[in-house]
Structure formats: C-alpha cells, structure tokens
Image (cartoon, rainbow, N blue to C red; front, side):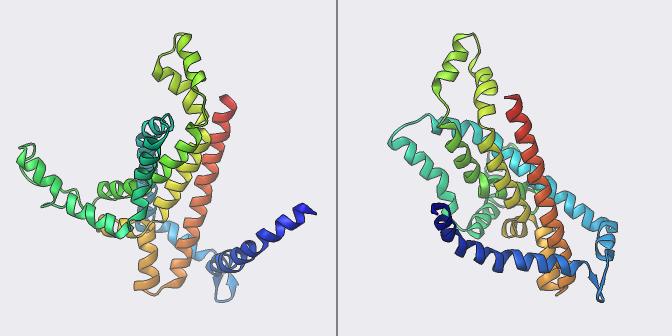
Length: 273
C-alpha cells in the first residue's frame, strides 16, 4: 500500500516526461525513417556517405572526449582536497566550485573571447613577457572550444567526485601507507577505484553536456563546427527539419552508445577493485 502511494507522487512527473519528452523524441525519430509515406533509410545512407558530416561528427567526439578527460584530470586532486576538509573552509570551496554555474554560458563564452583573442589578455601578457613574437591564433579553434567547455562543466565533475570522496575513510589510506605504499600508490590503488561511481556520473554529465552544447562552440568555435551547431543551422537557418531530425537522432544514438560504454567500463573497474 505504501509503495502504491509513493508511486502516486511520481506519476505527475512521469506523465509530464512522457507527454513532453518521450513522445516528441519518438515522433522525431520516426519521421527520419519516412520518405513519401514509406519506410526508408536513404536519409541516413546519404549522411554517412557525406565526408563533411563525418568530419563534424569526429570533431564533436574529439572535443567532447578531450573536455571530459581534462575535467577528470583537473577535478581529481581538487575534489580530493576539498573532500578532506571540514567546516567553513570546505563550504566556501564547494561554493566557489559551484559559483561558475550561476553565470550564463554566454557571459562565460564572451569572457573567453576577450582573453583568447589576438588582442586579448593572454596574447598581450605573452607579448609583454617576450615569450612570443606575434599573437597566437587561439580563438575560433578546437582549443578555445575545449577551454570554454571545461570552464562550463568542470563544476559538475568536481561536485560528483566530492560526494564520493568524502565517504572514503582516511583509515584505508593510512593502512596502505603503513604497509609501505606511497601517497600516489595509495591514491591510485585505493582512492581512485572507490571514486569510479562518481567518476562515471561526472563523465556522463560532462560528455553529454559537451556533445549537446551549442552556445559555447558557436561563439568560440568560429568555422570549427560541431554537431549541435550543424543541427541548429539546418533547423533554423536552412529550415530543413528533416535533415535536422536525422542529426538529432544521430546525436541521441551517439549519446546512448557512449553512456553504455562508460557504464561497461565502470562495471569492469568495480569488478577488479
């Protein structure tokens, strides 16, 4: 009886998701297999024969994967340090980690345009220090996209890892050190395997966010297109909704594939650990 009552609380949310998310997605996907009232795969065949689209897809995957890897590398030591703190300092650092989420992605992207431009702050600094002879071409490149996306999604990775690391007992590390393990070895063999659940959750959030992000790649990428910008151009500029639906379906398929692979990797790491 109690379970039935609990289900009633979930029912409004489930109905809302079904009506306004699942049904529209199903209708969009179904429309991609229709050609003059008949089932057809011609749209997908043409897409995967298009070298331009394949290059966009590869660029998008590269940017998303590099963004995720950089977020992992940066977040691991930061999250470990924050997780071991107590009291007000810990709250302040968590607040500072989350603070970028309170700023619009557009504002953050424009700030990086000011920093990375040919007459931007970074180039001016390097020129004044005589480290370079002419301004570097940093803006409107995959590098600028990755920098903007890391800034955008790094807080999600940090918070995901802090939530897991703060539940790991210090006694485990101390026991490893008493047996002769260095701090790095103890972190690699004890802390890291226990962080896998938070790591996978954070990686999924960062990867899916990077894959589907539009504002940051559009402002910082310039001519370097990613699949979200390509989708927007087909839908809003060219008014080609059939092509846009195919691109959206491919994005959904890629997202579910990567998430599934990450879950498989998490299961293997957990079984070893």
